[in-house]
Length: 245
Image 1 (cartoon, rainbow, N blue to C red):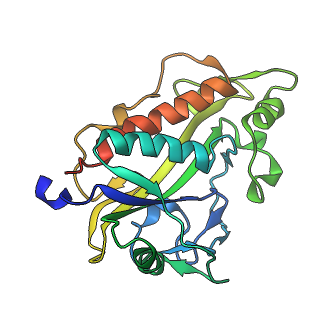
Image 2 (cartoon, helix red, strand yellow; image 1 turned 180 degrees about the vertical axis):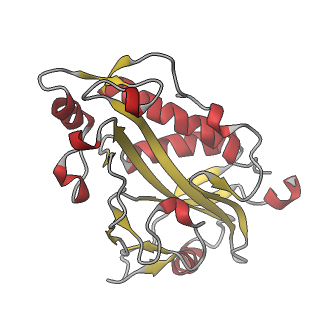
Image 3 (cartoon, rainbow, N blue to C red; image 1 turned 90 degrees about the horizontal axis):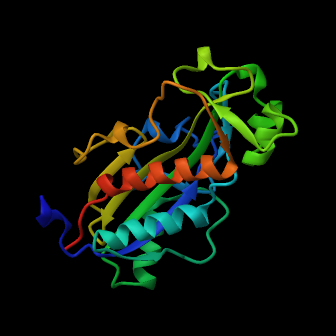
């Protein structure tokens, strides 16, 4: 198993935000399929008709924050990550294979590619509390808290079930995550993750990464929500990313 990841430590990383109210032409949610060489990675999003009724895209978790988390976890695994840049892209959908081909010309010493989609999503406990504009734009946590609990700086994070939550509460906040690690030049996929589906068996029970269901409701401000969302992503990456040799 380790042999597959030899000579992959110089990795070019491409991270793309996927708001929950958008979709790819043939894919309504980032968890519907693995990232393949034929996947459109840039310039392809369009409005979705399948937005869950309680879901809101969160602006506080941006690409810079996710890249910082990802780079730290990659370094712990023995990778030498670099943020991928390929210059101006054509005014059309650009596939993963096109990006890899361009980058290999720019940097022929790269040994692997990591393509990632992320979708930071908060769920309100009652669908009627969700903002009407959520189909068209993202919201900051402070905006969401003010909508749910006007004049306050925190909101109730419901513990057991959304159906039992107090009015104006949230039921979950989560960073949906999909990624594929490709070997350079051959473009062989080594690791494939599509949200909750993993092509190779992870070395841990991922649902145990906090936060999990609780017996009680508790107050959470924007800082607490961000910490819970990012700590959960760190936990998952620790067990989803392979060791580089």
